[in-house]
Length: 256
Image (cartoon, rainbow, N blue to C red; front, side, top):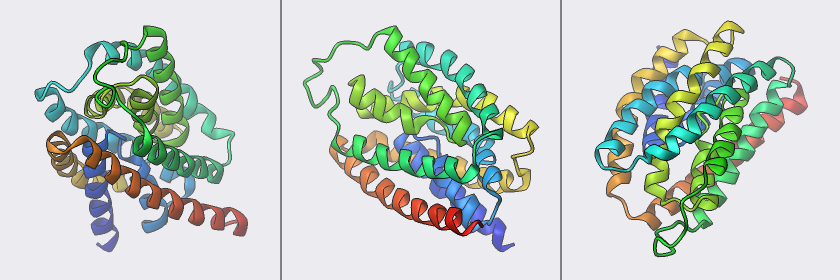
């Protein structure tokens, strides 16, 4: 009963973050599954992936209604992201799980810095050119590979890349990221499920929390000021990255 409550709460908080910041949610559910529910490392990597799909669908609906999804970007980001996600998931068989989770912590910290300090097209008076199809496809492939390998949605790569490198306004990047993630988590989920890395009971607990959380988070972001949004996500993700890295380093050193 306690595990169920913790799983639902973890899913809700993750859903809020996913809907608010377009990061897929697994950057929070992965450490929650590992630390709060004491799941094995590879289960912590694989289980959040199927829960990401309903999360992103719930959040993306609000952004689409607000006109904050870039259809052209989705068409170029999603296909290479899907293919790379399957490859990344397959490689989890030969890479140390603790190393994967430490890499997740590093990505969380990287996103905190990029989102907190980056400038978007809105900051530059909408003067930046549209990103090329090649740049979008490459970004999608990198994000997809990280999604499959680390059990994350890919938004941890997509959002800072689209805002900091491709100069997309943050809210549009968040909405577009959620749509792309919905495609990318499918192959990763299938591979991890085949490999036995998905605990379907924990998945159910997470899903009960993530859907209402994603709806709430997306509505808040659509109404929030751009700079406020950046500061909130940067501070929160920095704290998560630091705590997560400390816990995984301890487990790696002690052989837990």
